Image (cartoon, rainbow, N blue to C red; front, top):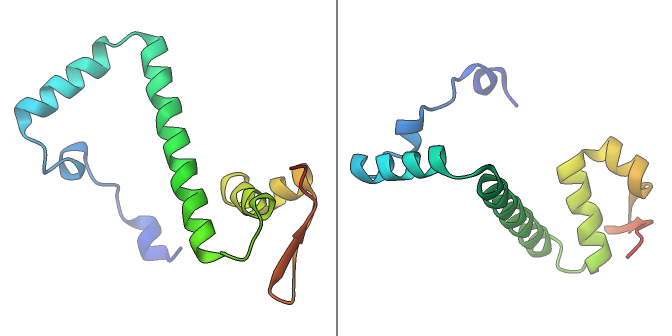
Length: 105
C-alpha cells in the first residue's frame, strides 16, 4: 500500500451510503440498534460467508487449473495471511506455475 493511500481518511457512513435515501437509512439504523444480539451475530456471519464466497469465486477465476483444495489453501493465505496459513496448513509452494500444498481436504 502506498503511503498516500495509508494516510487517506476512511469515508464517512453518509459518503458510503450516498445512494440511500435518508428516510431509508433511518429505518436501517433503527433496525441495527434495536435488533437482538443473536440477530446481529447472524447478520455478521452471513456477511462473512458472503465475503468468503466472493473471495473463493475470485480465486477460482484467477486460478481455474487449481483443485478445490488448492483454492481453499489460497483462500487461507488471503484470510489468515501467508505466515499463519503456512503454520496451520503447511507450506504453499509454486512449482512450474502449479501450486503444491499440504491440505487436508
